[in-house]
Length: 491
Ligand SMILES: Cc1cc2nc3c(=O)[nH]c(=O)nc-3n(C[C@H](O)[C@H](O)[C@H](O)COP(=O)(O)OP(=O)(O)OC[C@H]3O[C@@H](n4cnc5c(N)ncnc54)[C@H](O)[C@@H]3O)c2cc1C
Ligand code: FES
Ligand code: FES
Image (cartoon, rainbow, N blue to C red; front, side, top):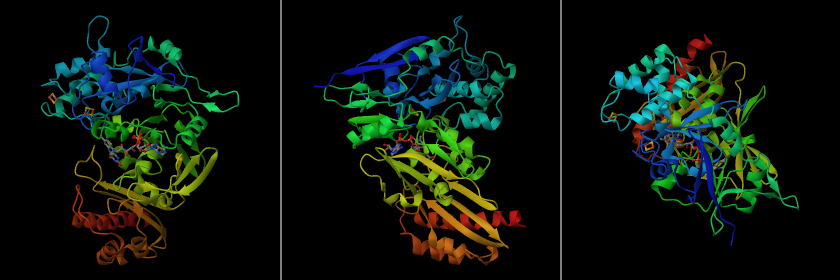
């Protein structure tokens, strides 16, 4: 028998909550609604799409004096990942004197709510926005709302309400000072426990009588050691895939290793050649990192899910999940991104294009994981373009996404690297198309030559998101667009 550990500790509105006896896969949403009666947070889709369940999760900031928040879809986050953090729900917004938060009051004044089902999620997304941007532009507001679906009100009064709330700029900030000492009190050790023999012992957040565990290590050495001991354990990064597997496929992993508390994996190393993005760095952070060097890549990421998805989802999770229509991979492949893989103490560094061996299959050995993704910085004279085609602009996965990198050499395309998702069992480079482009002037590249290369490169198959005819046409036209767009740059 294993000793049972069954308490998740988090801070809610100036109090420590000790959640006892929860399962490894209990969602934050279920716990809030069923155990804490915080029923303002709603369940719509249970798959991260509708935003009815948005809450804010807080962590001590770098100075230790305040709390940094991020919005999450509570339906797809597992309660044990909240251990050591704080949470704000729509109920948290009520002031001591009973008055509403300015965003809530403006929603009332501007008629921003009808049936009200979406309203708590919308309010939480907007309150999160105004913590970071008290004077948001229209695009900031629509971006913040891109993961909140409202069927009856229409978005204009909601956008008006946000503007109205921000006009005075007063009372927008959440008062979280009571949470700060409590967050310090429940903070977990930042160094691993060692046995007398010097071996790392992972202290689980939860452990059942059978010995199944949810562990939340704080160092990469702990992750590596745990995975060597439990090679079948499920890694949990941003939970935006795993959460769906739990809710929709009723997956119940025996051992879960949460990466979100691992300091090294949350870091970005910035060298003159590349950014080394740790496996627990969120897409929001990645987006701000690369936005000046690669605006098109940043735009692909801006259209990746919604802010509550991007606030926790990771590049490593996107890559490891290996969906044929995963969005970050075409950009990363075109840029020759590399992966640092780790098993125990051993690391290896491979190109992303060497990673996939088939649909959702890859070269990871049992117990091995992605430690970091290296994104090369632009070379002098390099052009990078990318575009995602999807049915909806936001909160939708690709029909196809293409990315290209090249240089100009006296009006000719040189060192072309082109990659797609949606055309093959995994995102991939397109060497035959690259050969059509290499050394050519844009005028010499014909649609017929590109069509022939597409037909020779990929197996035609219709998919749920698009027919093959559509995808093939888009794949060709995007290339033509990319090189046409950039002729002016060369001139
Ligand atoms: C509403 C919604 C919208 C979405 N929109 C998009 C979109 O626009 N484009 C898109 O491409 N995807 C989209 N996704 C899918 C998902 O968000 C991405 O695949 C995301 O990048 C997964 O990252 P994560 O950190 O959340 O992964 P997790 O769910 O934590 O893990 C995903 C998989 O990767 C494994 N894993 C995680 N980290 C590692 C690691 N370091 N090493 C090895 N294995 C690891 C996990 O074990 C799991 O199998 C969406 C999902 C939702 C729910
Ligand atoms: S319930 Fe729809 S996003 Fe969570
Ligand atoms: S107010 Fe009814 S769904 Fe938005």
